[in-house]
Image 1 (spheres, rainbow, N blue to C red):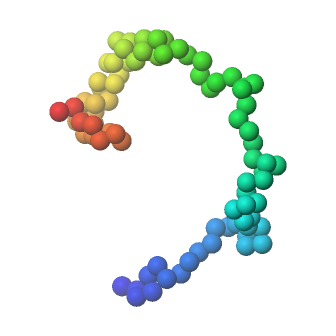
Image 2 (cartoon, rainbow, N blue to C red):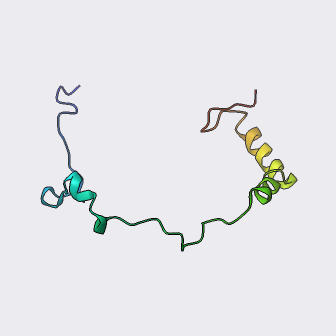
Length: 82
């Protein structure tokens, strides 16, 4: 094994030292975008319609087939079928 492992610090290609901003410069209003109420939401589906899609028999069948294909292994949330 190399005893210098991890000793070299690399820099990212898109960051140059002379372009770095100080934290107080990052807070200047001309560098930030405000949230806009003029733009519509990404999804305007109601929660009732969303629940209808969740409990749709075709969706439940597709989800169950995925669970069976994974043999009940936990997903990203760590939940199993047991």
